[in-house]
Image (cartoon, rainbow, N blue to C red; front, side):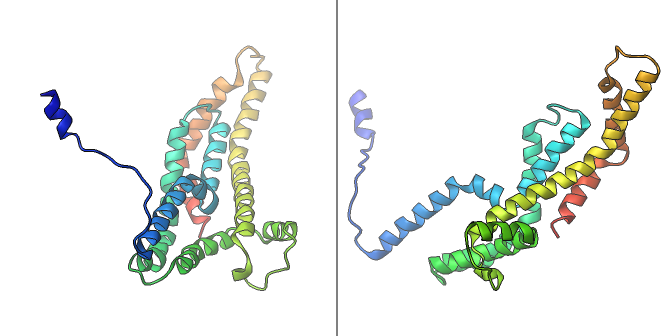
Length: 231
């Protein structure tokens, strides 16, 4: 029986052979390109989409409420991820129908694929990038002032877009902090005036902040404001 099992196991050969025709080499390059894109996909998600602004705002909200690990990081990341897909859906569709699908049908080459695929993302980033931030990286690279958007490279646009997103997220986070900070100040003042010094103000302010956030339907307002901020 052992011999029969051994005979049934197929042999696997691993080797490098020369391509019989140019199409085989082209397929190899396509596979290599796909693997490269998949390996840097998480970084692309952070650099080219709305994910950065969303996750920073959610993290600031959690700290403003005084909650250390609630909601958990997995929940905040999942929410930010699906909101990113919701916001970026028109761009993903445009990339698929104008770039990826024609390339799969062999209507365009790799160079045109890259140009068509990056154009929607560049338009999205330009819309959400401050001119001051863009000018900063243009000057840092020693480039001449571009005459139009097409002359701005991704190496310049992406970091400008990212710091613009961080600045916007901090501005939104500051506005989120104000009402909860007022509650903390009021609670602390009341406890001090009553002479209650042994009771931590957080014990009183935390449920009040949660109550306020629930009464105003905070998640609804926050998500609606974040999504609309990209349009």
